[in-house]
Image (cartoon, rainbow, N blue to C red; front, side):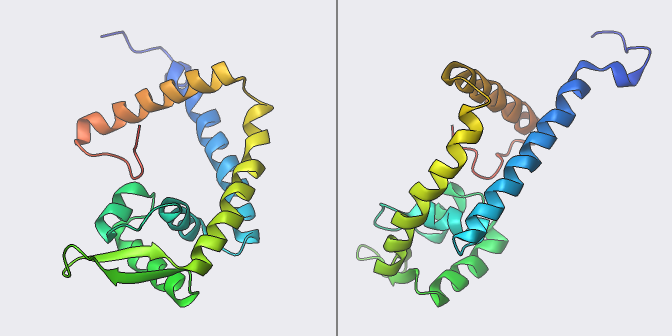
Amino acid sequence: MSPAPKDPGDEPYLKVLRPLVEAFYAFLSKDDRHIRSLGLTLSQFDVIATLGDTRGMTCKQLSEETLVTKGTLTGVLDRLEEKGLIERVFSEEDRRVTIIRLTRKGEKKFKEVFPNHIYYIKPFFERALSPAEMKTLRGLLLRLKDSFERDEGNTIKGGKK
């Protein structure tokens, strides 16, 4: 164990923490503003992007594959259903299971908003990082996420590798 620094403000991780949080908030601000300009909330976009090009998913699968919490997901699905973008249907294999899938209108919305948003976000990354730096950063962020999750024995929402 390393000795404590004389000034707690000299901790090396503190030099990383603030820029990391600031980068996250800057991304979230741009991300949210653009997605709202496309007529969706972040959670609605997450669900549509996850369901796009699939045959549908159960509510449990959606909660595991998106960044939307279980408590919020039902309300998000209700609003997407009201907009005519998703539908809930019984599974053909097991009628007790409900599948959430995009409607034709939802597929159209997915094909409109997903590429639009991906190309909107892309330049922010490309002007700051080379492909090699992005690969390195991804690895570092995954290690950091794993470090936070290790003690709690759980995974952060959307914690896919």
